[in-house]
Image 1: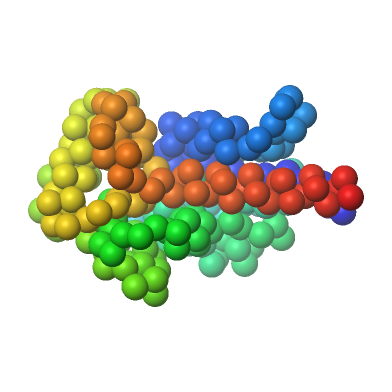
Image 2: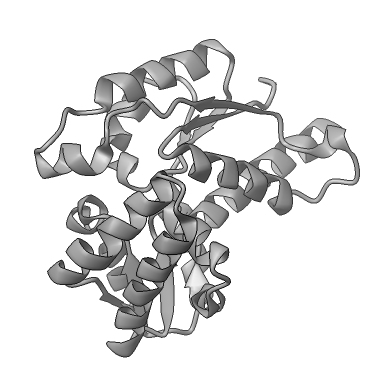
Length: 238
Protein backbone atom coordinates (compact mmCIF):
# COMPACT_ATOMS: atom_id res chain seq x y z
CA UNK A 1 0.00 0.00 0.00
CA UNK A 2 1.28 3.46 -0.93
CA UNK A 3 2.22 5.43 2.22
CA UNK A 4 -0.24 8.19 3.09
CA UNK A 5 1.10 11.72 2.69
CA UNK A 6 -1.28 14.65 2.31
CA UNK A 7 0.03 17.38 0.04
CA UNK A 8 -1.37 20.86 0.59
CA UNK A 9 -1.26 23.26 -2.36
CA UNK A 10 -1.33 26.44 -0.31
CA UNK A 11 -0.23 30.05 -0.23
CA UNK A 12 -3.67 31.34 -1.32
CA UNK A 13 -3.33 33.10 1.06
CA UNK A 14 -0.61 31.92 3.44
CA UNK A 15 -2.69 32.66 6.56
CA UNK A 16 -5.58 30.61 5.16
CA UNK A 17 -3.15 27.73 4.62
CA UNK A 18 -1.92 27.89 8.21
CA UNK A 19 -5.55 28.00 9.36
CA UNK A 20 -6.27 24.89 7.28
CA UNK A 21 -3.32 23.08 8.85
CA UNK A 22 -4.76 23.83 12.30
CA UNK A 23 -8.13 22.50 11.17
CA UNK A 24 -6.45 19.29 10.02
CA UNK A 25 -5.10 18.77 13.53
CA UNK A 26 -8.45 19.57 15.14
CA UNK A 27 -10.31 17.23 12.76
CA UNK A 28 -8.13 14.22 13.54
CA UNK A 29 -8.76 12.13 16.67
CA UNK A 30 -5.19 11.54 17.82
CA UNK A 31 -3.83 10.56 21.20
CA UNK A 32 -0.20 11.21 20.27
CA UNK A 33 1.88 12.87 17.55
CA UNK A 34 2.24 9.71 15.52
CA UNK A 35 -1.54 9.47 14.97
CA UNK A 36 -1.78 12.85 13.26
CA UNK A 37 -1.92 13.27 9.47
CA UNK A 38 1.47 13.34 7.71
CA UNK A 39 1.40 16.56 5.69
CA UNK A 40 3.64 18.30 3.19
CA UNK A 41 2.56 21.91 2.62
CA UNK A 42 3.57 23.93 -0.44
CA UNK A 43 2.76 27.33 1.07
CA UNK A 44 4.01 29.67 -1.67
CA UNK A 45 2.19 33.04 -1.67
CA UNK A 46 3.79 34.28 -4.89
CA UNK A 47 1.05 32.54 -6.93
CA UNK A 48 -0.68 35.07 -9.20
CA UNK A 49 -3.88 36.56 -7.78
CA UNK A 50 -6.80 34.27 -8.60
CA UNK A 51 -9.48 36.96 -8.41
CA UNK A 52 -7.59 39.26 -10.76
CA UNK A 53 -6.92 36.40 -13.19
CA UNK A 54 -10.61 35.51 -13.48
CA UNK A 55 -11.53 39.18 -13.81
CA UNK A 56 -9.11 39.51 -16.73
CA UNK A 57 -6.96 42.06 -14.90
CA UNK A 58 -4.03 39.81 -14.04
CA UNK A 59 -2.04 36.80 -15.26
CA UNK A 60 -3.23 33.23 -14.89
CA UNK A 61 -1.84 31.33 -11.89
CA UNK A 62 -2.10 27.99 -13.69
CA UNK A 63 1.60 27.49 -14.44
CA UNK A 64 2.50 28.21 -10.82
CA UNK A 65 -0.25 25.92 -9.55
CA UNK A 66 0.99 23.17 -11.86
CA UNK A 67 4.49 23.67 -10.50
CA UNK A 68 3.14 23.19 -6.99
CA UNK A 69 1.31 20.04 -8.05
CA UNK A 70 4.50 18.73 -9.67
CA UNK A 71 6.48 19.46 -6.50
CA UNK A 72 3.97 17.70 -4.24
CA UNK A 73 3.81 14.66 -6.53
CA UNK A 74 7.59 14.44 -6.68
CA UNK A 75 7.70 14.53 -2.88
CA UNK A 76 5.40 11.51 -2.70
CA UNK A 77 1.98 13.01 -1.94
CA UNK A 78 -0.75 10.35 -1.97
CA UNK A 79 -3.56 12.96 -1.91
CA UNK A 80 -3.61 16.71 -2.46
CA UNK A 81 -5.88 19.34 -0.89
CA UNK A 82 -6.21 22.95 -2.06
CA UNK A 83 -7.47 25.24 0.73
CA UNK A 84 -8.58 27.94 -1.70
CA UNK A 85 -12.03 27.91 -3.26
CA UNK A 86 -11.25 30.15 -6.23
CA UNK A 87 -8.24 28.05 -7.23
CA UNK A 88 -10.66 25.21 -7.94
CA UNK A 89 -11.40 27.03 -11.22
CA UNK A 90 -8.27 25.19 -12.46
CA UNK A 91 -9.11 21.91 -10.67
CA UNK A 92 -9.52 19.77 -13.80
CA UNK A 93 -6.18 20.88 -15.26
CA UNK A 94 -4.45 20.29 -11.94
CA UNK A 95 -5.98 16.83 -11.51
CA UNK A 96 -4.98 15.90 -15.06
CA UNK A 97 -1.37 16.76 -14.21
CA UNK A 98 -1.34 14.92 -10.88
CA UNK A 99 -0.76 11.24 -10.17
CA UNK A 100 -2.19 11.84 -6.70
CA UNK A 101 -5.96 12.41 -6.47
CA UNK A 102 -7.09 15.93 -5.52
CA UNK A 103 -9.71 16.32 -2.79
CA UNK A 104 -12.40 18.76 -3.98
CA UNK A 105 -13.36 21.41 -1.43
CA UNK A 106 -16.86 21.92 -2.87
CA UNK A 107 -17.72 18.22 -2.84
CA UNK A 108 -16.52 17.94 0.76
CA UNK A 109 -18.71 20.90 1.72
CA UNK A 110 -21.83 19.68 -0.06
CA UNK A 111 -21.51 16.33 1.71
CA UNK A 112 -21.82 18.18 5.02
CA UNK A 113 -24.74 20.32 3.86
CA UNK A 114 -26.85 17.21 3.15
CA UNK A 115 -27.40 16.90 6.89
CA UNK A 116 -28.62 20.51 7.21
CA UNK A 117 -32.29 21.47 7.37
CA UNK A 118 -31.94 24.96 5.89
CA UNK A 119 -33.91 25.85 2.77
CA UNK A 120 -31.99 29.07 2.00
CA UNK A 121 -28.19 29.17 2.32
CA UNK A 122 -25.98 32.21 1.76
CA UNK A 123 -22.68 31.89 -0.11
CA UNK A 124 -19.86 34.31 0.71
CA UNK A 125 -17.26 33.91 -2.04
CA UNK A 126 -15.18 35.62 -4.68
CA UNK A 127 -16.84 36.67 -7.92
CA UNK A 128 -14.89 33.92 -9.67
CA UNK A 129 -16.29 31.24 -7.36
CA UNK A 130 -19.79 32.68 -7.66
CA UNK A 131 -19.56 32.91 -11.44
CA UNK A 132 -18.46 29.27 -11.59
CA UNK A 133 -21.64 28.39 -9.74
CA UNK A 134 -20.25 25.34 -7.93
CA UNK A 135 -22.02 26.02 -4.66
CA UNK A 136 -25.25 27.35 -6.20
CA UNK A 137 -25.56 24.29 -8.46
CA UNK A 138 -24.78 21.92 -5.61
CA UNK A 139 -27.33 23.57 -3.35
CA UNK A 140 -29.92 23.42 -6.12
CA UNK A 141 -29.40 19.66 -6.44
CA UNK A 142 -30.12 19.40 -2.72
CA UNK A 143 -33.32 21.44 -3.05
CA UNK A 144 -31.76 24.46 -1.32
CA UNK A 145 -31.97 28.05 -2.57
CA UNK A 146 -28.64 29.89 -2.73
CA UNK A 147 -28.51 33.50 -1.54
CA UNK A 148 -25.52 35.28 -3.06
CA UNK A 149 -23.93 38.72 -2.67
CA UNK A 150 -25.11 41.53 -4.89
CA UNK A 151 -22.60 43.30 -7.13
CA UNK A 152 -22.34 46.37 -4.90
CA UNK A 153 -21.75 44.14 -1.85
CA UNK A 154 -18.92 42.32 -3.59
CA UNK A 155 -17.33 45.64 -4.51
CA UNK A 156 -17.79 47.43 -1.19
CA UNK A 157 -17.77 44.63 1.40
CA UNK A 158 -16.39 41.31 0.21
CA UNK A 159 -13.42 42.37 -1.92
CA UNK A 160 -12.02 44.99 0.49
CA UNK A 161 -12.70 42.64 3.40
CA UNK A 162 -10.82 39.79 1.71
CA UNK A 163 -7.81 41.94 0.82
CA UNK A 164 -7.75 43.42 4.33
CA UNK A 165 -7.14 39.91 5.64
CA UNK A 166 -4.37 39.39 3.09
CA UNK A 167 -2.53 42.45 4.38
CA UNK A 168 -3.00 41.38 8.00
CA UNK A 169 -5.81 43.78 8.95
CA UNK A 170 -8.00 41.02 10.37
CA UNK A 171 -10.36 43.20 12.38
CA UNK A 172 -11.00 45.53 9.45
CA UNK A 173 -11.62 42.54 7.22
CA UNK A 174 -13.83 40.91 9.82
CA UNK A 175 -16.07 43.96 10.15
CA UNK A 176 -16.55 44.23 6.39
CA UNK A 177 -17.20 40.52 5.93
CA UNK A 178 -19.62 40.49 8.86
CA UNK A 179 -21.59 43.19 7.05
CA UNK A 180 -21.66 40.94 3.99
CA UNK A 181 -22.92 38.08 6.13
CA UNK A 182 -25.58 40.33 7.65
CA UNK A 183 -26.79 41.34 4.19
CA UNK A 184 -27.29 37.70 3.21
CA UNK A 185 -29.09 36.88 6.45
CA UNK A 186 -31.39 39.86 5.94
CA UNK A 187 -32.30 38.39 2.54
CA UNK A 188 -33.34 35.14 4.14
CA UNK A 189 -30.18 33.03 4.47
CA UNK A 190 -30.60 30.60 7.34
CA UNK A 191 -27.03 29.31 7.08
CA UNK A 192 -23.87 30.67 5.45
CA UNK A 193 -21.17 28.95 3.43
CA UNK A 194 -17.89 30.79 4.02
CA UNK A 195 -16.63 29.89 0.54
CA UNK A 196 -13.42 31.90 0.69
CA UNK A 197 -10.76 30.71 3.10
CA UNK A 198 -10.04 34.25 4.33
CA UNK A 199 -13.60 34.70 5.61
CA UNK A 200 -13.62 32.36 8.65
CA UNK A 201 -10.23 33.72 9.73
CA UNK A 202 -11.60 37.28 9.63
CA UNK A 203 -14.89 36.49 11.38
CA UNK A 204 -13.04 34.60 14.09
CA UNK A 205 -10.80 37.63 14.67
CA UNK A 206 -13.83 39.72 15.66
CA UNK A 207 -15.62 36.84 17.41
CA UNK A 208 -18.52 37.23 15.00
CA UNK A 209 -21.81 35.54 15.92
CA UNK A 210 -22.20 34.64 12.25
CA UNK A 211 -19.70 31.82 12.78
CA UNK A 212 -22.42 29.90 14.61
CA UNK A 213 -24.56 30.05 11.44
CA UNK A 214 -21.70 29.09 9.14
CA UNK A 215 -20.41 26.12 7.21
CA UNK A 216 -16.67 26.40 6.64
CA UNK A 217 -15.47 24.66 3.45
CA UNK A 218 -11.90 24.61 4.77
CA UNK A 219 -13.15 22.72 7.81
CA UNK A 220 -15.11 20.35 5.57
CA UNK A 221 -11.98 19.78 3.48
CA UNK A 222 -9.93 19.11 6.61
CA UNK A 223 -12.49 16.61 7.86
CA UNK A 224 -12.52 14.83 4.50
CA UNK A 225 -8.72 14.59 4.52
CA UNK A 226 -8.81 13.34 8.11
CA UNK A 227 -11.34 10.67 7.10
CA UNK A 228 -9.05 9.49 4.30
CA UNK A 229 -6.15 9.30 6.75
CA UNK A 230 -8.19 7.34 9.31
CA UNK A 231 -9.36 4.91 6.60
CA UNK A 232 -5.72 4.38 5.65
CA UNK A 233 -4.67 3.76 9.25
CA UNK A 234 -7.50 1.29 9.81
CA UNK A 235 -6.68 -0.61 6.64
CA UNK A 236 -3.04 -0.83 7.65
CA UNK A 237 -3.94 -2.16 11.08
CA UNK A 238 -6.37 -4.84 9.86
